[in-house]
Length: 593
Image (cartoon, rainbow, N blue to C red):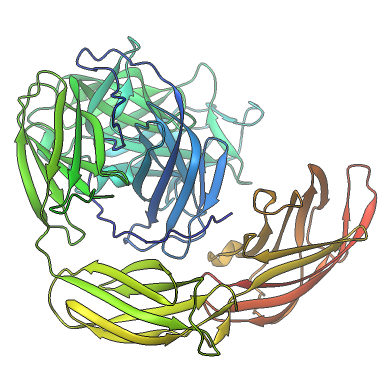
């Protein structure tokens, strides 16, 4: 389920990462110059992020989990966790979206920190298939292959031998490409076979997933192996060693774990694996810890600012400061590094050399000046009756970047750094939570400096959303705000579904209700069969399949994106004793895509 939107949607830069940024203040982590694994603790912290696809476009309605916490990305690909439990050494967040490999990020976290990550999802692309009985070779890309023995595949859930066609989904990542760190899982830290934590220098990585004819997940059978052959990136051939450790990614803990060795054969690294996940050819690198805080010339912390480090051996890496301008992480030991602060336009506006880092680096507080032109956008917001809005919002989109800010006592003020002084149009939408009204998009010409958008009316369309559910004689009224509800679409033509959901974590009834409409015949307005389930205070009810006995959902209106869907549903759900109970529901929910 989607949590409340951020008050401000921060611009994102998609660059590479080898540091994990977080607030440290007065509680510095233990030194890591000896690569000993520091003490790991569970801390309470916050985590925000943005998820994009392979083209850099926002991914909406992706499922995001961290430990026991779960949410979804909004229309801008933004997610937000507030005060959740995280590992201090490997705070881990995972993103799942149909049609993509799971994306993830691992961070260092300290109590009370507000962290930011950026994740780019990789398309889950079929690379070929082979007969389970005969085995085969699948090409991931030119020079990179996976070789399977015959009769070496089992069904992962049951460990039973599988005898059909094995479908292989895979992707290879060249570590020298600019955006690899937002596409790879976790970060470039691993736990070696000696139990010590180390920074990793990658010479190539790939993900492999196996699937049966019925979509079941497959794995390598016990006692069997598959052979990985990974092409060494051109830029790393001169430094690639004769042998290199293999590391797999544990997608439960967010750690790279050393397991096995690959041998160089010409321009390839060749090694064996007994299971599939992400695999990485990595040389361990000695590390030290750094700590820094960034502020501007007025003493204001520079939140979510990208720090870029340039290493003579590892190239360019980086990560974000937290909400208070703090950053800490691991950097290569014994090297002189260039550290630069990057603005949202992708330009460096501050730089300093650090090192050679023979021990932990305490850099203190650095003052950074951003000389970009700034747009100071102000205005007032009134409701449909002309009264000042004192509980509302302004959404602004400028230079392709989105921002959101509160309306306070009928006014707003938003400072937006521009990537140039070229005239543009800011697209504004204003809303009033009390009247549940919002405006249509309002275009305001802008350049830089102070621009008064004037008096804007939060009037034009209703923003209230609700599910009114009657089940077993009791009515549950779920409304936004304060509750949260969700609608999403899966766009693949062959498996399209339309999902409606209420989650118990966001209402006072202890009620979760999820139902979906399947099939390419969906055309918007009309009546459809549904599948779904409901839990009320952990009591489970279900209608397992879409057939003639299924609850019927009638879509009365099906608006465009950012408009609304209205409708009703009626039918029956059964409990664990196969006792059926009637249900009716009417709803209004915003269409997100």
